Length: 142
Picture 1: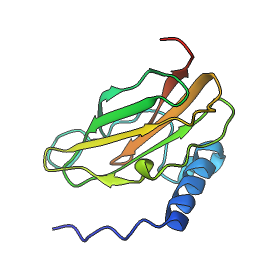
Picture 2: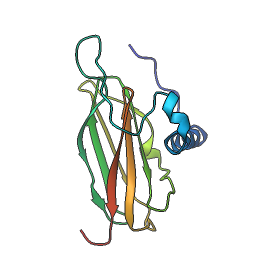
Picture 3: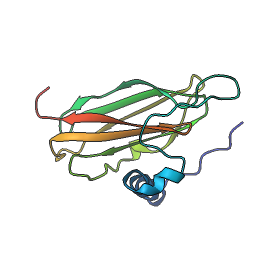
Picture 4: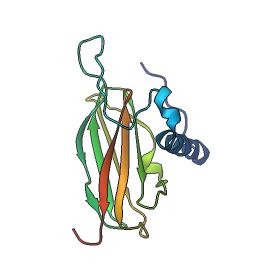
């Protein structure tokens, strides 16, 4: 059985977002095990490490809903972050790290800021040592 997750305070969440941003934007990621490119590794059971993207919002309007769903190993810690087109990271408690349920599913949904700039935002999802970046178009029309 996995130990319970520590409480998520605004300070802990802020540190998580800052560390994720630092790693994504710096060359320090090269030796940290965190990657912004897809990677796949074998597990002892012969399966695949990482995650499978099930669904994510490819387009959204300012103030609109963003949805992400992945599948990974049950109990795995999963993270998500979103950098807006202007480089500002979205800070929302809905973006907190989460543990995959018994089926291995992690789900996040949150609203973009109403003043989110138009353009291409960068969604980063990570689980099981696998981190990938996806583009999300923020536009006023569908």
